[in-house]
Image 1: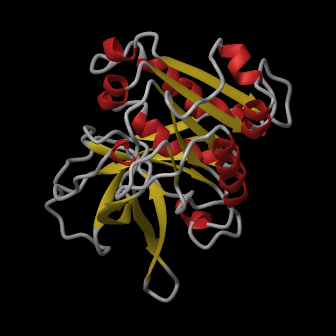
Image 2 (image 1 turned 90 degrees about the horizontal axis):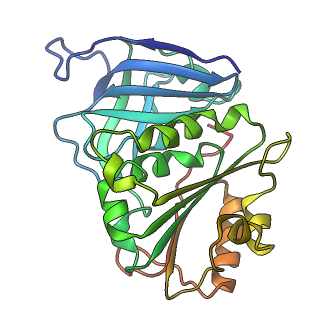
Length: 277
């Protein structure tokens, strides 16, 4: 796996007239694999969001109109910049272009955050499970850096499944950096349990999130009891098929799906953008 990164020192408030509507300036781009990259952009002064929410971002299409997709914000609410984590789709209307951005370029960012993967949508509990595949990790990259996560829960479990070890690298580096983070390191302590798995390459943990939950393997490996509605809360982000499968499993454990207007034991991000972007 070859990682390449480019960074620039970009001002938080641009004085030049933007070339795009709702323009923000790219400050850093990191290519993690041939099909995964992350990037950071300036943050609009007007943007206030809850960690775990998403916004619409994009570029201008050939017709001169904005081509926008929903992207979870991977940075926490306190960050001065915004971070995003994306797949590269060769024929994707947006990512076929977005993957070529460089520091100094502009993207369109509509500062109207929404989403269901927020703490307000869950009832109080003892443990919080973050369940993701691929770039579905993005909202949890935000929530794992959010102090409220560790103030609300005794244990935070991050289950993340990718095809290969290289595709886990973005998440692995983020998790490893948290305990030494000057802002939240003390809060994180030993509360965060990281459970990465692969499906197409040998690794110390293998198998899908769904299989490791239903078999009980993840509970045995981490020394935790099986999920129960009195203590466990969960957030889910992946493909539509993944979300449906995990929802059924969580319901079988006795957990009930909630929403911003009706907090319960788990929530699913329905706006996650998959392989066609």
